Length: 107
Image 1 (spheres, rainbow, N blue to C red):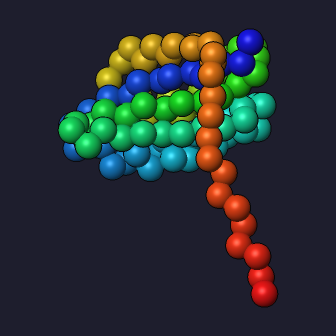
Image 2 (cartoon, rainbow, N blue to C red; image 1 turned 90 degrees about the horizontal axis):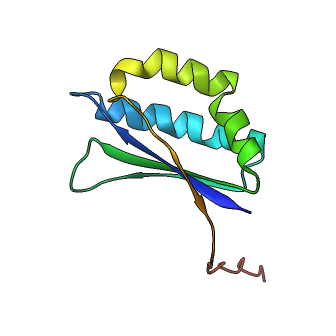
């Protein structure tokens, strides 16, 4: 069953902007492992709080991403930039909807 993985990140002191940049680089790598979409959200109430989401059809593809060389390197390089432990949660996707904007027609 398709799912969305939520990874809550919490930046350590004065590293919030650096963690935001690093998450912006690692999140798209999920597409190489079969993700259909990804997102990183940053809280407006607490600028140190982030939520990374990746949409996968199979949990095995998620595990390949999480345990792949890019994410292992990410965690090793930036381990002092976020609080540990980092505990991800797989959510089964029950309903999904979206509005897709039409491309403008050239005259």
